[in-house]
Length: 337
Image (cartoon, rainbow, N blue to C red; front, side, top):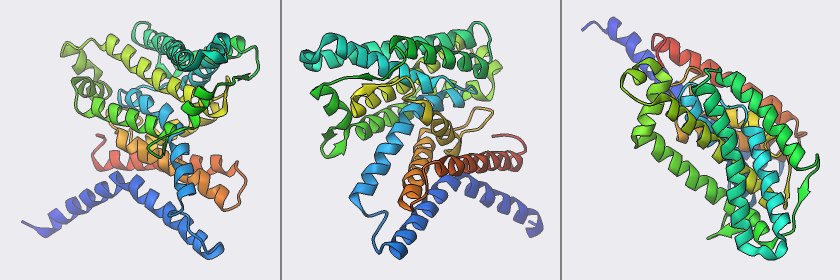
């Protein structure tokens, strides 16, 4: 065989592999950068300090709780912009339930508040799924509408204010630890494992990937696409709602805007992790890496003494890089994901 014919293919294959692994490489790169900064400027360490690791893990878990369900929706070729205020709605509802039951309600009050909060989040997911599946509203427009509705409802039920709550059980839920690991990190890890299994080891996951790649073929195969879409948006809303419950536990208060600052980070984590803008591609593992990249950038910039708003600039640049990488992979495969 002529080497001149095989070399370009080999080079393209290597470049594609490099692009597929870019998020891992980028995470290693920024960790190395901040470690070098810490060694040179402070004489200490960035990576091997327990406080830093825990702070990064907690920040990543907040992003993941919104991004996990969103990953499934994006893999199916859609988007869910309502998760930011679905988080806020769940947070406010949970706080109001606990306040209504009183501080003497104990763990039973906390359990009831969790169920009602998740019920409120699920309702948003049902509306999103119904709009997209039955009314054929583009998910970008439909979830943008429910974004506003969820925001308004959260502000209405909260009376336009933050709902503060005093509860030892609630504080333990948001700030406690399990075997030395913060509760938010444990919950995010368990949800990540569950979503990974759902996407990679079940028929539901196969149909989700196929739906993003070619909806017509999924319909011809006899899959109930409308039911599947509703389930996807409910899962996205529930994981975002869990983020709201954790927020209420961490700060002993429910706020309508609890998830608003994290929405950009959640969307970014999914695309940084390798999801395609056109659907049919993406992994939970990639989303986890994307969340850690953003959390490291957040904490690292503060560690370097830069103002917090530089985080938005840095994350925005990384999003652009992720889109460019996705487009490059598409060109290498002749337009296929």
